[in-house]
Image: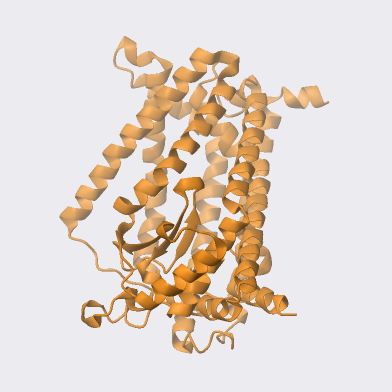
Length: 447
C-alpha cells in the first residue's frame, strides 16, 4: 500500500493539494479568530488609554478588521482556488514547456537557460496575479499613516530599476543553482547547504555595513544626559558604549525601534532616532506635526537598551543562528530525500524522465514541505517570543521594569500597533509577544 502510494503521481498530487488547502485554511481560521477579537474589543484597553486616544484606536480597529477580511478573501481566491487549479491542471509543466519554446537558438535549449526563462515568466505571472489585490489595498484600505506619493516619473524609474536588478539577481541564482546540481549530481543538496551557510555568513558580516546606506546614517547622540545614562548602563554590564549607534533613518515614518545583532567585534545595538523623543533634536522647528511628541523619554530609552542588552547577555544571537542551522539541515535532508523521486514531478504534469532542477526546488520547497515549514516556523516564532521575555526579565533585574513598561505603552501607541490580538493567532504569526502579554509578564516578575 505504501509503495503504491509513494509511486502514484495522482495520489501525490492530491496530497500536495491537501497540504496547500489545509495550510491556507489554518491561516484563514487564525485570521478569523484575530478579527473576532478586534470586533469584541471596542474600547481601548485601560492600560494604554493614556497614550492611545479612543478616536485613534477606533481607526486602528477598523483598519485591522478591513485588512483582515481582505487577507482572508485574497488567500481563498489567490492561494487556495488558483493554487489548486495551477497544480491540478499542470500549470507549472505547461509554463516550463512555454519557456522551452522561447529558446530561439541551440544554446538556449540548455536547462539553465530554459529555467531562467521559466522563472522570469513565473515572476510575471505572480505579479499579474497580485495586481488586483494591490490595487484594492492601495485604493480601498485607508492607511493609518498616509504618505505623499512621489512623482510618476520617479515611480516608473523605481519600478524599472527594481525590475532590472531583480531579473539580474534571478538569472544569477537560477544559473548557479542549475549548474551546481548538474555538476555535483547526488551531492547537490550538500552543495546547497554549504552555499546557504556561506551566504548566511556573508550576510552576517555585511549587516553592519549595509545599515547605513539603506536605513540611515550614523549620527552622534546630542543628548548628553541620555549619553551619561547609557554609558553607566553599558559599563554596568560590560558592553562597549562605542557599539551603541544612533541611526538617523531616511524615512521618518519608520517605526520607533532599537535592536541588537552581531557577535564579537561586530556586535551592535542600533537605536533609530525615531525612538528618541522628538527624534533626539533640541531644535523642534524642523519637525513635522506627526513627529512632535513622538518617541521616548530618556529613562525609557535606557530601559529599551537594557532590554537589547538582555539579548546580548543571554546569547540570543548565537542561539538563533544555531536554531536556524538545525532547521536548514533538516530542510536540506528532507529535500535530498524527495528531490530525485520522479512521481513528484509527474504529479504536477511532467512526463516520466523530465525532472528540471528549478521545478524540483519550487514544488518541494513551495508545496511538499509545507507541513514541516509551517511547524518549523511556529517553533522559531515560539523561540523568539521566549527570547523577548528573557530580555524583559534582564531589564527588570537591572531595575528598569517600570521604565520598560512605560516604554512599551508609548511605543505601541507611536507605531500604531493594534494592542489586542488573539493568543492563538499571535503564537503562529508574531515574533514578539503582544504588549499586554509582556506587561503581564513584567507584573509577574514583581511577585
